[in-house]
Each structure stands twice: as structure tokens, then as C-alpha cells.
Image 1 (cartoon, helix red, strand yellow):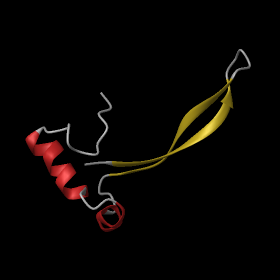
Image 2 (cartoon, rainbow, N blue to C red):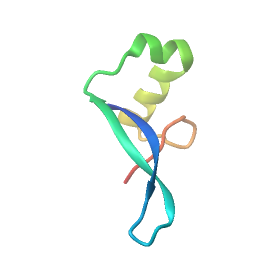
Image 3 (cartoon, rainbow, N blue to C red):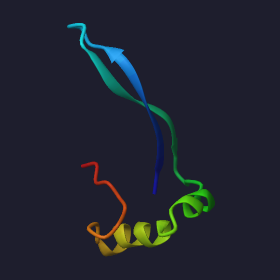
Image 4 (cartoon, rainbow, N blue to C red):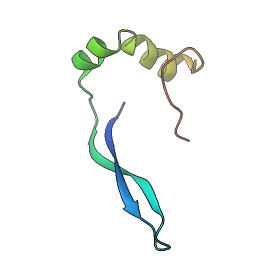
Length: 65
């Protein structure tokens, strides 16, 4: 399980248009589970349902691929 801390940054494309770009701040192999549970009470249920039961529909997760 990985945790990725992201921020958004305003940037200019080559054509001059302003766009938001993702900026990766940190990638952790072991996220701060204590803090995750404090702010997201079903954190462990969602993680295990996603990883081991392949149940994405009822979990607060985002599929990236």
C-alpha cells in the first residue's frame, strides 16, 4: 500500500494557456494509518475491501489505472 501526497500548481503551457499541474510531494510505502483513521473512520475497511476482496464500489478509493 502506498500513500502519495499531492498538491496542485498553476503552470503555463507552451501556447500560454494557464493549467493546473499535479506536484508529487511525497510517496510513502506505509502511510500514517493513525492519522488516516482519525480523518477517515472506514480507512482500514476500505483498504482491505479494495486490496483483498476487489470491492471498489462501496469504498472511498480512486482507481488510477
